[in-house]
Length: 224
Image 1 (spheres, helix red, strand yellow):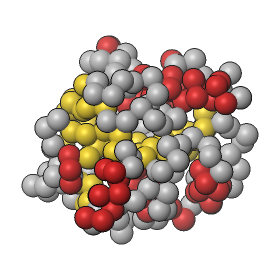
Image 2 (cartoon, helix red, strand yellow):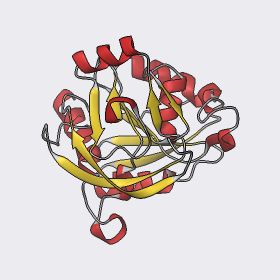
Image 3 (tube, helix red, strand yellow):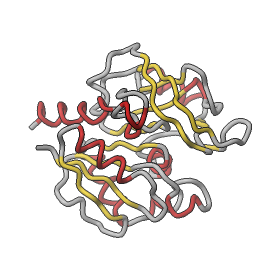
């Protein structure tokens, strides 16, 4: 059984939801603490949503210096699957595991709603159970989800098939309607919507988020 670690920072909100999604997918969730420098022999890592360190300075700007992040960066650079959800995506950008940055939403309003997305890439450790062009709906909730990058970076992301999800009705002003991206290797994925809230109809309206968690297990099984 795959062991998937979920990091808790001060201000994290969705760590329990992420661990539950991992459990529902058939893997073993492992709680990881921000002040530890050990990943406890996990096979993959999730940085969940919330407001780490109160989003002081910038969202994710302080969390990047947490002891656990040194271990996460080293593991990611070695090929370990890492998923950043919402605040986790912001942290991945701050650590430069992913390019670009997040700013306040267009209109400067917090957005909380079911969000329609189109799957753009299945060539990652977290999306191989989807289909290219598939339209899904998962929960979105953020105030700083406006993805920005310079034109050269955007060109590189598009040409290298690193845009993983695109908004079908852009809620926050993100350039190129980008909702999620991956690194060149495909093992690190960040997205603003919350797949862990959409793993069963009772709580999220759809189960469209569950393939994130089954995808990484399939990848880990195939590479074991």
